[in-house]
Length: 478
Image 1 (cartoon, rainbow, N blue to C red):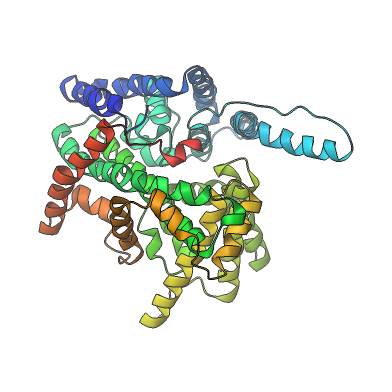
Image 2 (image 1 turned 120 degrees about the vertical axis):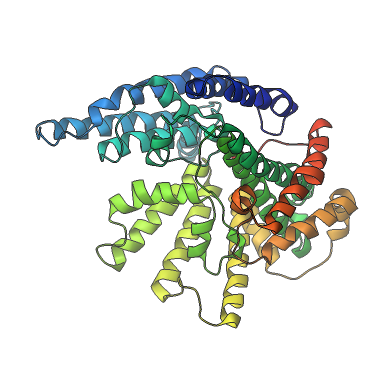
């Protein structure tokens, strides 16, 4: 089930909100947990059993991972249990997401020597990368003593399977939401009033802009390599840069808005990333919940920036190699992660990871950062490395032939207008960020924007959804 499907918008979401609003406050977690499993089962089918199995293992391990300062003998047992549970979680992820990729590489090497090796073909469970990271956050935070284990399976099920963030984030670390799980909602109507405009903003981003740009992007990235030109390559790269942002930030806005309507404060995931002056700043603004997860559970345990420059660079490389691989089992994602790792190391090594002091320097660095990010998205979207390098090569050689064919097929007047509107995100200031402003600010500009989004914007988006002109969220594939 997708947030932009008629089934969700006209039936599922209203039913959940009405139930949470009118039934006793103490029923909230139960309603959310059961509704979330129904939400997941409509899209994942039998994979719901895999999610439940992972939940059972992590919930059962939780109490035994709590530190006991009065009993030093249990420390080794806790450590082994933590490693065992994390190993279980990662093994589920590795098998279902990466077995096909791994066997493809083995089969390729086997063919070099005249051999044969079967390639595993496993369907990818929806949201497996996200609920795996939620489980790891849960057990690690308990082990560190940051929060106690949950004894109530309904509360645990609410955290792991909460439908706003189950399929594509944001990645909610356990210590961020633990204190919210037992709370009884005292201002339910206020939460709905604050959360719905945020949800509506995300719906507009996704249905009106991202989905309208998708045909143009698909046309550019399906151009045969021999027909690729400078103009087509740049149109596709810029179009995808905008499509991905409005698609994923739109999902995050919808998830945060839904969470707020249910009484939960989910973490922010985007903060005008294309306004960044450095690549380092970009990663503080893009998919922020993923960056924070890797910082807390990988970068800092590896030593972070302690231990000298060489170890810091090594840790950055490891984190972004894993970041690329987390997004997908393909060399394009690995190269994308390594590419960003290189940029971050170069910035840190040259002292260019700080914001320049002069306006001219900031504008120049902002333009450079945007171009570097756009080049990176080519790897992210391309079907394979060969296609990505061909496209990047064409982006470096000015040639405006061949654009008319793509324009005639994909760039309608409506999409051209929306492309120009979407391009505004490249020029907006870094602050204020629209989502949080729309959700909670009481200023007149915020109220005007709120009314505009919830009238013209959401009505138009709803019409597009009703006519079936929507597509799955891009991050569902991760």
